[in-house]
View 1 (spheres, helix red, strand yellow):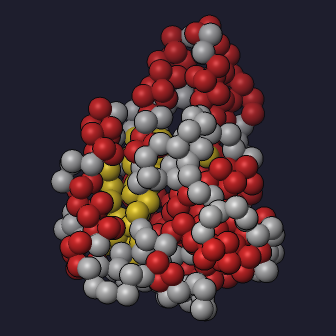
View 2 (tube, helix red, strand yellow; view 1 turned 135 degrees about the vertical axis):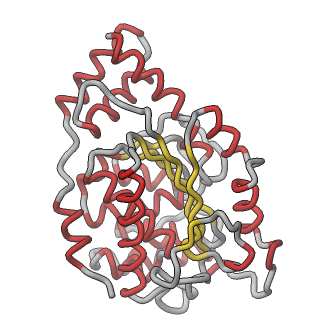
Length: 326
């Protein structure tokens, strides 16, 4: 049974990022004459509410979830794209795994709602039937989830963040896997902005964006249920809980951006805790613009599974080293 008090408590705990601490961190690295590092210092210091940013404890969470709108219509088992990508991460051969090793970051792979869940890696954290199992329904023909499932997904993300924080968490990077997430991101962008996204070169996504725009202003859980997936909800809960304990979050592609849109609908102040790794692809640049975020890199990096976000970690290490020396 979902408890609305959990989500309400987390949302109410999110205060604005500290502009004073962000500027203090910036001044400590200003001597390096590196504007990019100064930008990161502002983001890190403001989110952590300190002029001495920390980054010793870093985790990359990758949420896997498939959307009914992208269902291929046949059982692919181990050949499903989400399963293949998840195994590459779990087996340590994916680009993300290599970047994580060099960045001294642990990866937590979460099965939030993969269609072929039986074929997912055994090491993937399973969230059980709470936030929903398997792909969502087709958002173009009806709600993707029930409101109850959407609430449970957000609460699962909150619980995951609390668990990670118990072991120490200074920086959180997020990624996502799943078919249909592009269409869902268009729908959620339309709902967040009230304007149907155009020029996507995908008629289904544009139709989803137009459908989302008709629901602009609806309560966040209703929008998540209508257009998102369990992984969107888990990401939203993860972001909300991390921000509530002053942990900066690095976003990757449009699926993580969709989670950020939902989180921002609950708590607008969360934007001050988000770091956009790169401009991404498809809807991501527009999502970042809506959130008021400027990407560290103006190009797209990776496919949104977390590699682009992880590539920011070495830069953050430079920030923390300079801040301690400054």
